Length: 175
Image (cartoon, rainbow, N blue to C red; front, top):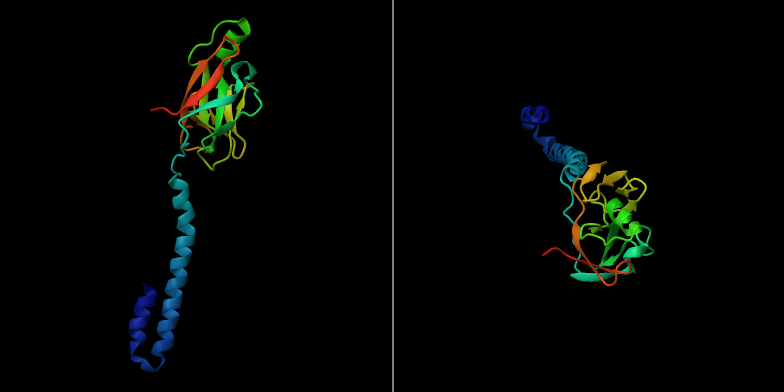
């Protein structure tokens, strides 16, 4: 604002007007670039990324339910996105007792953290899903409970088929 009034006062000095206009435009451009450089990262932080979604409709996991919780290949490729399959603590108790698993004992999630697209992992000892990039923590329903993740994980539908203890895990998108 002060610069604007100074320019108006100095408008009578027409001999240096082109140079003063150039200096004024340079100053305005520098100020605008500084404002953008300061507020752009803040705006990107406040407005989280859009939720990621897999393109697959149904995939059979490359491991069986008896290999959980530390199955090789978990998370696995689900239409170009990693999919994490989790056996809940209640499901692990039923499985070790030889009882049949209930439908909600095995859960599947998009294994991409909603904060900065790191791959999450299941921590069986703590019973949660953990992102090691910035200490993001999700519960076994995919809800973010600690750290910077702004949204819950995308959940997938799980179906078990086959003989008890040797079931295949079929993961599909909710429709």
